Amino acid sequence: MRKIYILDTNVLIHDPKAMTNFEDNDVVLPIYVIEEIDKLKKESGNRGASARIAARFIDDLRSKGCLANGVEMEKGIFFRVETKGDTTELPNSLRRDTVDNRILAIALYIKNKDKDKKVVLVSKDINMRIKADAMEIPVEDYRSDKMDLEELYTGNMEVEVEAELIKKYEKSGRIKYAEIMQEEPPANCFVTMKYKEKTLFGRYNEKTKRIERMSYGDVSVWGVRGRNEEQNFALDLLMDEDIKVVTLVGKAGTGKTLLAVASGLELVVERSKYKKLFIARPIISMGKDLGYLPGSEKEKLRPWMQPIFDNIDFLAAVKEDKAGEKVIAGLEALGLLKIEALSYIRGRSIPAGFLIIDEAQNLTPHEIKTIVTRAGEDTKIVFTGDPYQIDNPYLDTESNGLTYLAERFRGVGISGHIILKKGERSELAELAATLL
Image 1: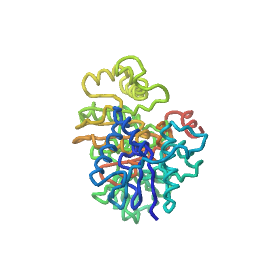
Image 2 (image 1 turned 120 degrees about the horizontal axis):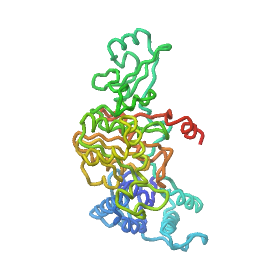
Image 3 (image 1 turned 90 degrees about the horizontal axis):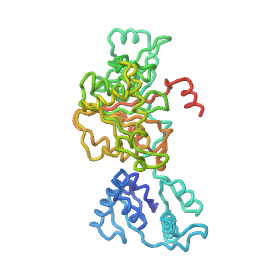
Image 4 (image 1 turned 135 degrees about the vertical axis):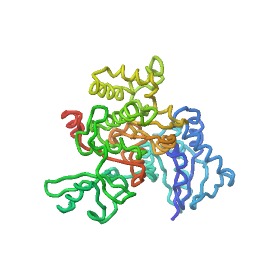
């Protein structure tokens, strides 16, 4: 049975072309959503960009017919813009002058009018979903890009092997995957081979169809080494120039950002494999916005970029006992390092750069796509983040861009992914991340 899906504004900001994902159903946009998009389109950040994309897409649909009467789209979707809906039908306890409640009024109008179809309001706003449910309007979160975090690809697997296979791998450093497992693993998946007390590690090469000894898992990177197996796996991906996209997922203290920054400094400054190291974070504040802070752009960014400065300060002390501030200033003066807000990445092309996107769990899948498409020739992009620490009000552990990217790029030859589970910052930090 065809359903009528009514989309809230935040759905289009999350995914500007969301209406194309409701195959064989009707999609309705309340007129108030168009008004909100019109207000947001002037913003300079990602919300403004999404609003402009959504507006252009809807405008293109006008060529197919009148939006009030509805137009046919691909995949059997029928799209229209609804202008009717009386706020007098709302419960007396709800205000009539808020956009959210007016959208609810339209949803209630459509529900009462089209009784032969199931009407579903789709919103990423938790409170909007609560109010709709209280009014007995069927409501759902936008689930097109959701995935179960518990089922997220870990980036490694463990197999039990025979003694002769262990000896063979120790001698040659490679072994056909078919000799130790039935199904072919994803490209660049790490394999832990065990025989009694013996444990060996390797990474699957989809071109040779073999599990091969890691090339960079035990290297010193800007004065630091991996402290556990997963960190060694991460370093192997970070230091491999053939891997163009790396996603590092893990709770606080597992070393995601530190390993990414150390690898970037090693490859840019020491080995000159890339022209510049770019480090960016999304500005998701829990207080006042960026513009309220006094000072220059660099001074405004400092509170949000402090974790990056802390990591470089630590690495500088490990390597040469120099103050991190001097190292940062020196590298910036040489044109080897650029630390900036993620908003400034849009519209740019980054050739031959090592790009680190920290706190990527606060990005939408659409924003992740925008960033990856900035990559020029010979550029490497590293995304780090903790899906359990999301500050974006419209994202959760299942719908953020970091886990979306990790799952969509699973098995792609030029990408690598690893989940870091063991905290290495301190015993206290590990206990806090686990118990709190």
